[in-house]
Length: 359
Length: 273
Ligand SMILES: Cc1cc2nc3c(=O)[nH]c(=O)nc-3n(C[C@H](O)[C@H](O)[C@H](O)COP(=O)(O)OP(=O)(O)OC[C@H]3O[C@@H](n4cnc5c(N)ncnc54)[C@H](O)[C@@H]3O)c2cc1C
Ligand SMILES: Nc1ncnc2c1ncn2[C@@H]1O[C@H](COP(=O)(O)O)[C@@H](O)[C@H]1O
Image 1 (cartoon, each protein chain N blue to C red):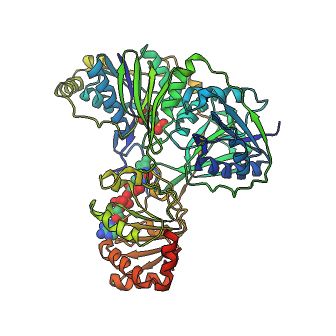
Image 2: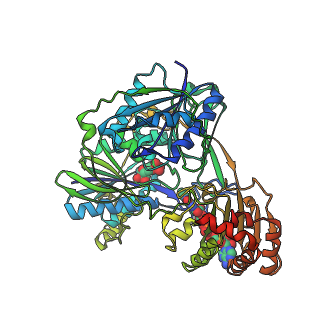
Image 3: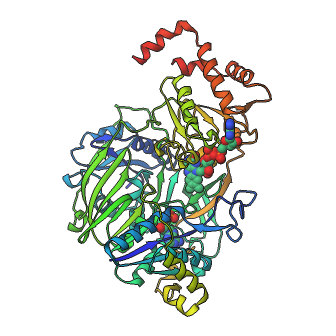
């Protein structure tokens, strides 16, 4: 059996979620570095079409479990099917990846505990590399390990990243933040094997019942799809400040308003707008940070943006360490000026095109 | 109803005390606090006890000073506290922590509900709750923001992407409480008075707060601490210094600064698409 990198792929009612494609993108890089195969794992009901979708997005093979009891995600049935599948493998996968979603964060620790293996939460980078363990306090761990999963995530404190390793046991597991990894371009000509996964559930697996699921997608702030994000932080000083940001956002196409956690915690804007470690991860073409200091927990949610502008009255604010351009000044003076100048600089002959685009 | 709530003492990030120049935390010097997420779990536990009767046992694993948060739980109305404290637990990752907490909960006997916080601010993994549920062999409800007990079942609403989900689950179960759940209410007068008495009266204290070691709860030391942890932090890296190519516009009026910016950066591209 060729060794595998296994990726758990989420879908909602048969519609594959962005995180699944992002994990396939990340998993592909890892599998290629390891000379391993990339296997996708998907569970649900009436989802035979997903096999080819996952292959087109980079999987070499797909394990597909299709069963009425897997219709909606529930911890114990999913746990059972996955543990049974892995128990049938002659060798454990090298790596298992899940998304840091409410599903992935529910399922991954449960699997890791059952498999007695390591799990790193909320990774923002993954890589493969060597590691030599020299700490003698546990002699069973000593040695040089060549192909370890480097699970990299923000760490406690303001500005540290930690590289977490657990090469002693496979699978090495990690959950990955949505929006961080890049999906592969779709290739419908790709071919791969699709394996049906047997489903045998115990009565105890089915005790929890999902009575109702409510998803209001219209209420969702679609930061992930926005091309321009105007974010506000504690420097706004009040909820009213966000009105100014909305005005600035209106100057741009496909824009949305984001926020730092301190602004959210102050009650100025709902949590759905939060960008960062405990909020959304975004990579718009343009990110404008207004009155945001640039703490690591905020940064990991936005530093892959194409162009980062920062407005902050403190020239030594950390945000200026990773923004591309920064205006040092009071946002209440700078933003109205920006709105004004952006408007007047727009050549009028291009306007019809812009209108056509919005229509 | 036998209710258990897991709470952890974490360094207070709001205060600068104990934060080293390189951004690491000196846990000996740092100010300590109850993990903010665990306040919601504590509220859920006390609410359950007040509404449906029973006892609340607050459980914590940590060095001796962590007893402070057990006092805090008692002041809010918890019935008793238990602290697992043992040097052999140092450097435990989530798997080892969940094992040790599982042994502690089992040591307490049967339970109906175990409440956990969603995550800690120092470990920051949200893994310990589900890993504990796996060890205990019971169902779990994560991201719970509302619940009620109906006979021997819990009906709960959990947060999911873009919405919520109602589930019904038999007890016993592990519940991790979302921070959109009810906020922790005030300390009770009776609780606060009890804590004052406990601080003076060592004999009485031992009837409310128990401190146990791995031997007391019959936990295997090989499965705790460094030995029982499949993961290690191999390296930390400061990220604040990366980059440094920011073009700064400063020292002039806002009108001039914005003009300078807009000559350098083609924002038009984003406006027009
Ligand atoms: C476990 C954990 C998870 C976290 N998750 C997140 C997360 O997901 N997202 C997140 O954002 N944070 C998160 N944080 C919090 C993070 O550490 C910071 O505290 C937070 O990002 C700071 O928000 P801020 O930049 O708005 O506020 P501050 O740090 O207070 O910065 C305000 C800035 O505004 C500037 N300013 C003030 N007035 C003006 C003015 N008139 N004009 C211009 N500038 C002005 C100031 O110079 C300052 O730089 C998390 C923290 C922890 C511990
Ligand atoms: N040392 C500990 N003592 C008691 N409870 C803990 C401990 N560590 C984690 N927990 C519980 O597990 C939850 C999740 O923690 P974590 O996985 O570290 O993010 C916390 O909110 C606590 O309820």
